[in-house]
Image (cartoon, rainbow, N blue to C red; front, side, top):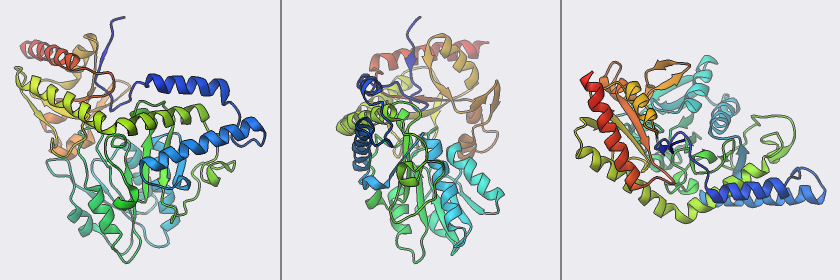
Length: 384
């Protein structure tokens, strides 16, 4: 089969060869249950704690503040639902943004159904909110602010440090959560300096395995377990730990932390070269969101006058993997809430946007090839 040119790294990333090697070794040699008291169990427990130290160091946290999860969705759900459950007596007001990932949006909708009041902050034309919006939305009964670190569709970065530091000046506690699934591994994250209380991370966005992630929980907080059963993760998340997956995640984090500056520059270079080729092409386009305040690996492009779904099919047939700005399920296409929040309902960009996301293994030459393929597809569809 012809090899695909993969520009959908925001959806998931291919595993790094070293990660695969690490997991293979772990499946062969680290099969003991980390809760068992025999030598094989203790060995797995030791490996788990070594990994926890790596995860903690990557965000300037303490190892005891890292709760292993199945990924970003579980981490987001635990952060939001359990914070609300714990703090409901102090207030039932939550602040969030209009461009959150569904893993945040849905649990917040669940809170609303339970009687919580939700303030949804609109974004500007750059796809960002301001600290002032948060300040103006705060109330005495506000218990939680949940703001995405970097958006998964348009790549816009939020003023996380400014928000977190401001919240720490308040007389009453307002817990600050951020979904950092797309930002972790390219952005410098320091939970103490930035005033972050809860932070969600997923392994498969940084060339690690799927089904593994962590939630950072500030040790000043006490959240009840989302998953109940055994006493794993200091009674914060029941279930036998996925040691091979966690060790694969650890390897991915080690690689990313060692190469973070180079990785960020490499992804930004691919993004810049893509835009340069687009400028030299006949394609009429506009970038959704900001280029100045955005993740280096995500680029949302409104390709004017062409339905994104039709373009996606042409690119797929040409063995180019990208995503649209819409969520597709069982053949039904719903407008992207993120693009609607950015442009308004009915704007052409909502139906004419493709997301290109760059990552490990992609080359400049492939980027040039994709723009040429895209240019031919656009021309063909406009002629029809």
